[in-house]
Length: 402
Image (cartoon, rainbow, N blue to C red; front, side, top):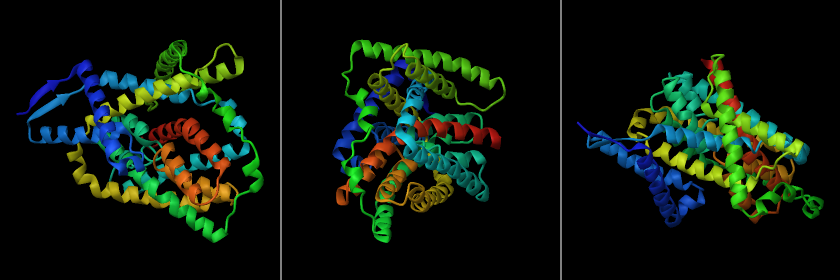
């Protein structure tokens, strides 16, 4: 019989910090990990999950980690995501941003339709299909780690967290590899050149990013903690109200709605200011700790029997992403050089995360021409709005399927 050991809240937090340190150390020494923007908590988390899975499998020791601390960090992180849902920013972005947001939102729906349909054909549950759809693909590791426990608890998907995290890691790599070939094919077929006038124009991206130039202060950090606390508190009330109607609702959804309300109240009333820099910093810290805690608990051995259906669906998702970027994103965005660059970027965050999208576009434009419009549009949609929409779509699908 294995030895059961309860790490408690303090031990769980300490272990998460150690995982981050190990992940960063490995990341700086293995160039391929930096190339594909694999986050430090994912690297360290996978290393430790392999160790803990083997220890449990050979019945040496079984570690119990504190679940409440992980849940609070998750809710706090998604509250910071909610603060990014500023309608003021969306209006400033204009028609191009809204068009790209529409493209990204439709892809989210198609990813879930594809995943659930293939899961049914393979004899798996709808929850299995959702675990390999927009949760890890467009959502990335943060959304994967948040919805994994929900799929396990309410939808009885064994190893749900392990499946979503593994799928998210696969997506990061695939998204980084897919963008370049799509862009090169579009350039060659349509003989694309940049719009010289656009290259000379000043873009409003600097206006949207000016807060990022502000110095982080103790006062600003306190204000950020305050608004996050109000969002988390208000979110618990919203979640309780929504759950009373028997809706399947992740605990963090309420916090996202509350944060979005607070953000737009700040934008339009002027009664108080949201410190974007400080909120972003706190969001990154909570995300990294939350991911480390989620990944170190994965049982990777449980994925062995599910490897084939997982890979079938994931490769289908990659194929659909490539076809969607080539035939839909490129055409909807105007069939221009900028549209091709946005298609390249869409492969990055449609299968992984915004940093992958930016890296895809940087690599592509470095060998071709600059694209200020693409570098303006992608971060707004990828960093500010798509996670909010994706969570809503996932929740709607789960309620419809069950």
